[in-house]
Length: 47
Figure 1 (cartoon, helix red, strand yellow):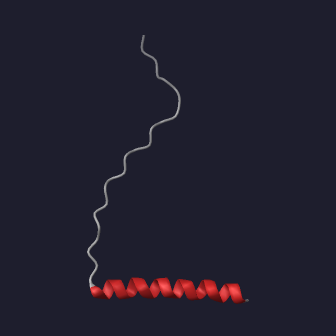
Figure 2 (cartoon, helix red, strand yellow; figure 1 turned 120 degrees about the vertical axis):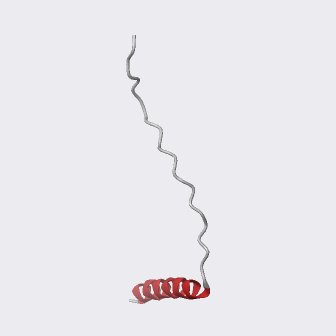
């Protein structure tokens, strides 16, 4: 007898993501984005 079993399906395994090597320009750009996001959040809080 073959029957499909019901129940919760197992999630698919995610591929391992290799750490990206950022050069100095990328690091600066990422830091800028973080700073701008913080400034926006502070700006909204002061309103």
